[in-house]
Image 1 (tube, rainbow, N blue to C red):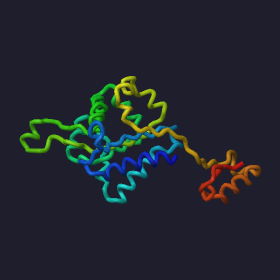
Image 2: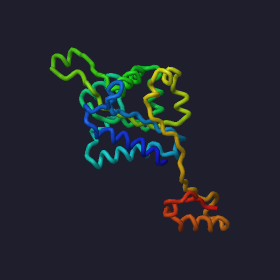
Image 3: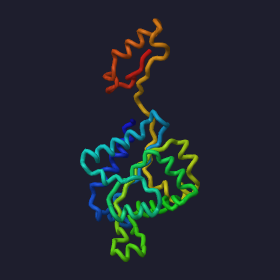
Image 4: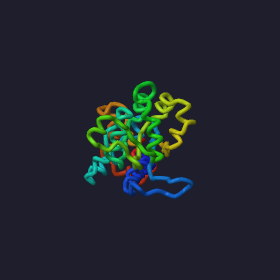
Length: 219
């Protein structure tokens, strides 16, 4: 995957290390919530692999609870933040997420994410929570988000208001293409004319991929 994808996913993990009440005294209180969007072509740009690696780091640190499942509704998003104010939302297929928020009960999620990014008070007052004396709000949510999407899905499943209304203005966007490719020779491996190229590919292995711009390409 392009290096910048790992930078975006890594910054979202780094945001988890800040104290939940820490902020920068700017014109207003600016908290360390970070939304990153990894944009690139399907399959070979490896956006999902960068996000999976970030999740694996949480697994190695035994903190998988900091990366909950993708919320299916606004209520699920709010309840999850109230239960765990510090978390990172990892959405490898952000195009599907955008498609689901176009005309359905998931539409308010985008508006609520604006409040989450700004660290506004998040809450949901219900009769059940009052009766059970449960916490019904979070004063300073520390929530980051990293998602992967193709340019085609980003164009198809967004509206003008998403860009002018402030939703995508809150995202740090990484648009990249894969720098290193490993191309196998075309043709029939059993054909005498293709045999030298196949044998060269098998002998080369993956070692030439390290530190070379032309690595992995065979004549």
